[in-house]
Image (cartoon, rainbow, N blue to C red; front, side):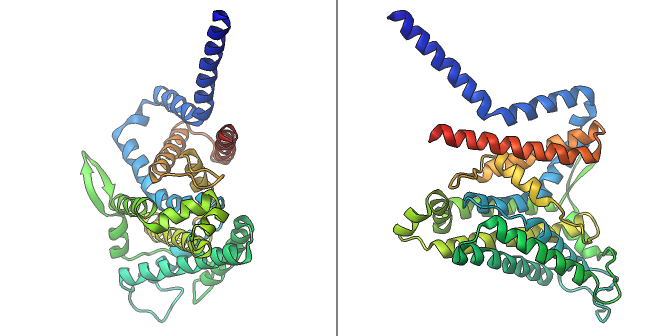
Length: 345
């Protein structure tokens, strides 16, 4: 009898270890990859590389924070990258020294006005997405696939305005570029850009919204069980619409920052950004089964993803191969997420 109990305890112990390893497989793989890259390329852990990773994380964080709310609702938003592209093009066309889209303009608009404008554009796309999901009961994938195509068409038409003829928008105003990419502070000889601070502020704001507001509590309630939330008095439709609108605003801010960060904007700006954002969210523990997710997890997910991609660049991995790796990361992360759900169930 004692031997059977000991065997059962030993089996349970190994099962726990196995489950722990499987549930954290993505983190383990990334850590091992970082160790290997650090050994192969010691400069990977250099100061300039670390600042570069932090800067890239800050640039991609807002879109991930937005799309994270959609995933909490058991949905997704594949229009995110195109909204980033549209808002980047709008920002670049209005905050430039060469007005090809609007030839009658003589000077750039005030920065706050353009920022509010693109946020309104992002919120409008989010409104369409959220309303279609909440009122028409359409699946978020189908809705955002539709708006992705619509927004892309709008981008192409927008870039044909004036004398631009679909060309890349460049020649951005110094005030715009300085506001986004100006030096926040220096670490040795390496400069940390200002948009790192903006990303931190956005993260704090989103943390407060998710954890300290009624809207945040309602979002998690709807994501966990929509019917139960409705019975409990939560306005489900309004919550869904607000989540998608908030996501749209975050995409717009990403586009505003991205335009100045890369110093240009064109029809391909924002392409596949939603893939990185979704991967980061799932790696960070935002579950597609709904009602589960933390802002800190999203930050960690984006950071880990940028670390691995930067490391792969250090190893001179073919740029085309990165798409395969991104796809595998999303597939593995989703499989691990579903496994956790099935174990709990």
